[in-house]
Length: 126
Image (cartoon, rainbow, N blue to C red; front, side, top):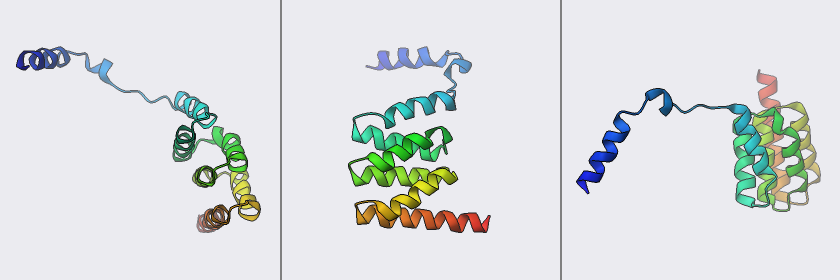
């Protein structure tokens, strides 16, 4: 066991530090997350939507607005609304405002109202 650990440690010790760097390509990440939003897997769909909101990805606006409008599960609609709020684009915020008025779920309507009103506070303060 010690021999294996020693060999493994020595193999990584001589590794080129430039090769070990992790690069972040926002466009590639956004493209993969947009594929995740279109997935049939609920967990992947919602986690991708949440990450796109954290990245403030304007490329995700239409996919998130579609999710907000079409998602069967209210939790998914809430995640889409929160992500649109985080992005802060006026078109996305208008979609959140409309969902606050017309969603079939009282919970979604209430949270969309909170997100929309909070966006107005931020806009008036900034």
